[in-house]
Length: 247
Ligand code: ADP
Image (spheres, rainbow, N blue to C red):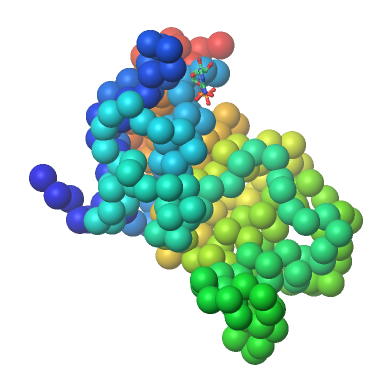
């Protein structure tokens, strides 16, 4: 059954590495304006799920529908253009460039030869960059070299570099790892702003942070869903306490 109300429909997703099923018949659905958090023990398959969705790893079987497109047959760059952004754990900003220039480089310029050869520093691009900088708490640091930003600010900048491409679905791998308490708070605020217009999938271990951001939680264990739902239901699920939260 075609469910158009979901942004993302993952059905029976499976990947085997030499016979070992890292993701094993996984099904879940992400709604518009949802922040889905994936939790679970190390090796549960969380990173592999994001790798499969963004086309980095090829699935053995299953389906990943983003709006009305099947992602499993698409290349990584096509999936980005379709509107799925992925941020990895370590920030990868251009250290020698300013915050403004990092955002400008990420501004989608289409495929034309002119577009890719010349920067358009026109009013429209500038306004968009300023808007994004405001969202990611870097409005006062537009001319600062990225190298001088804190670890947390670099993470926000990288999120901004994704936001400027206007993805409908954003996937983040442990966005608050290494952040200060104050930066975690602001990141929760940022994610809550982002889901006004988009959906997000986050891999996260910090349970306090999960409580602040999650619309729903999926607990993965051995490549399968162990539990799923609102945080207060999931955290009291005896199965979850046994394999994940109990220790
Ligand atoms: P998590 O992110 O939940 O910690 P991962 O998705 O990184 O888990 O890994 C799930 C399992 O799949 C692990 O046992 C890992 O060793 C294995 N795995 C992941 N990628 C590969 C790969 N490319 N080749 C072989 N095994 C892999």
